[in-house]
Image (cartoon, rainbow, N blue to C red; front, side, top):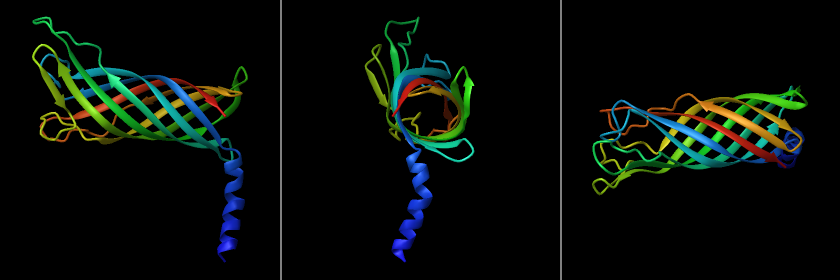
Length: 205
């Protein structure tokens, strides 16, 4: 009985495994932290952060030009130095994030000058390994994943995503937008959520 089940699973899954592709991607990531009050005294409520990211994906081709991909991404976002015009110094907010994107796509073969066009929707599971604010005007270093901090954030959040990719031969280019995450605040006195945009180039094996 066990051998029959294994044989059936192999027959069902083999076509998908055979058509699967592994890809490596690198690119630019821009995220915005939206808060109901400033994270630090002289910052705006919406703070843009940026990073270069690296991502690996495993892509399964399904019938009817459908596809599913599962990936793993790492990035370390940071704000540019935020200067206070009333005093000397700087403030920087940084996050290191580990993400697992799951995407469902539909491919239009040869849609753009021989390039395949694949719009997709998905969800991004994000784990924040570290998040902190530091400044040199007055010596200060706050870990925002620390529950004792007023503006502490949750380490885990989810984001819906939408985007498209174009691919030809082994090369692909992807653009993805995440309109918003779950509320990341660990305290009820304020809200903290993220949105983000990624643009990347990848190589498919």
